[in-house]
Image (cartoon, rainbow, N blue to C red; front, side, top):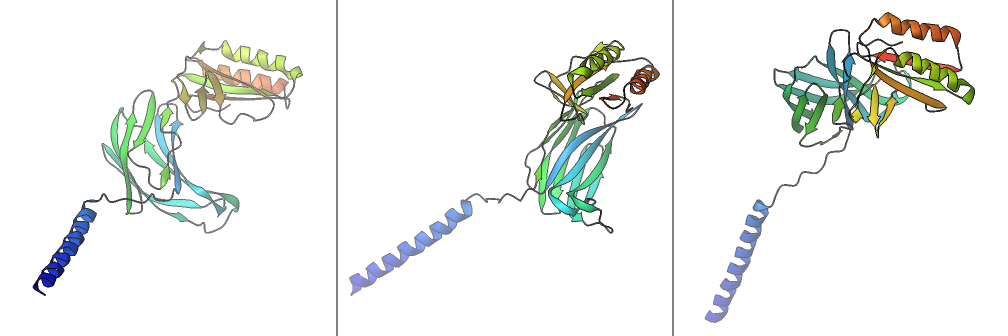
Length: 263
């Protein structure tokens, strides 16, 4: 009987040790954070003005809403070396603009000096993503250590070159090709070619050695151009006005400048 009691206590001790071991092991296990559902896109944009450049952060819901004018409620706090963005909720409009589309918000960050900025992007007060925004003369780079609840499609936005003029000429058939080529020739002679680095500039992209201007027609033929131009803007406007007065409808033209002008 004494031997049975001894064995019984030994078994109890083994079970107790195993339970304690499991608890200690569980306390040492890493805490696994479940990924938060992706709810918002975050995009960088450079606003162009005659004497300044301003960075803007565009928020957009990933899911479409049942009105075109839903907005995104947020809180923005900026100091000399840190930006904090707290995305709170999607806000329905007082008067629905019929249609389906994402909710939007635009945050004016301002004309920034070249430096590192600490960046926090949170969803409410529970999810915080930390990272940094690097600003230099060539680009804006938003690099987050985590992207819980958000998607940053383009982490690098290249800055539009100073004194640049760009645009496109679009036409539908071969008969208009000569007209388009003549117009491009006139515009190109106004300035000098620009050697672009590969990347996305917002208003246009330079990828695989091809210039693609945003907003160009997706059908027909499109020829794009970019030049460095330091002359009077009136000369560009004169070329555009004369062309449109002589050729309406069959050939379309759009010209933009680094100072924010659109022709």
